[in-house]
Length: 349
Image (tube, rainbow, N blue to C red; front, side, top):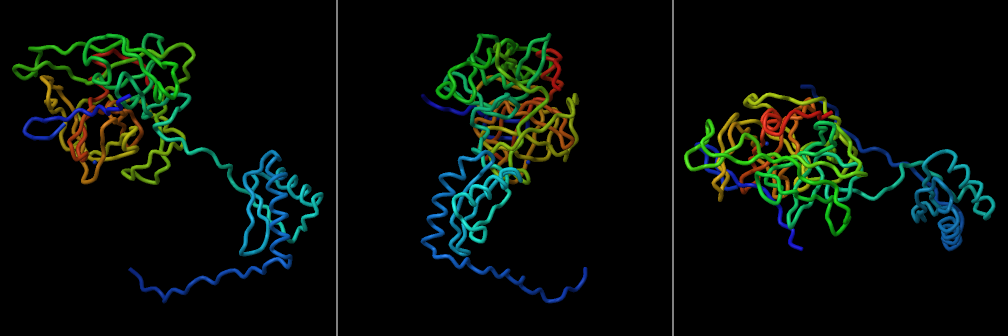
């Protein structure tokens, strides 16, 4: 199956874009701790390791086993003190001397789930699949009591108008049970206020899909990556960010920092450089009215990020990302106010 990543290339008005003292003493190197290797023959310690790996890792709360050649000891990682006690008791039964054993408490090791994997419950910023295309889930919403998610209008089988687009997460080939169906996507219209001649227009590139029965979703949550800061490219999922609410401005401050999380470039950040701009979508006869432009000197958007949630530094939901330039240093989003004006008010947290 072809996996094309929708990201609309845009041409903003007046901007051509292809579719954010004290002296110190001389430092000294730290002195390494001296560890005396165990007095047992390495071959014997290796056999004890084999025993502890086979028997010890069957105990609840164990994480790993290792033969540490530098100290000639068996190392067993455990999640908590109860598991440590069980490991030491097992070692005694197996004849492993306490002097040849190190038990270390550590966090459990899990699969590194990414924004492109199956995520349950569903949250904003993760990968969604429809037809032959990939996009990002924007945010969860409740509209008229209906559990839903919002993504980009062009992340449907036909941009503008409801044709019942069916969505999967992350891919139909991974999980063949669909998560939801498109229920709201207003048509694009000519001759509305602010629409350029010969164009069809809306104020938001946004659509809403209703979740199917039995699909879990978390209202007010968007994906958090494991990155210590923005624009690193990490896609590894590390919990979620709780939205503080919705920011219903349609004009944002020039220089204001905006964030987004999407399946292609993860958590990225830039500054608002244009506000309430009318934007032509390259290769189409569509214009989006009153959109926000965010820029950075590094890549902040890529194909497949369409639909991503955009949020402020205070974690307030600001809108839906739908486009960018070819170098990925400029993104465009539809403000949440415009989204709600077109597809109705809805609860976002």
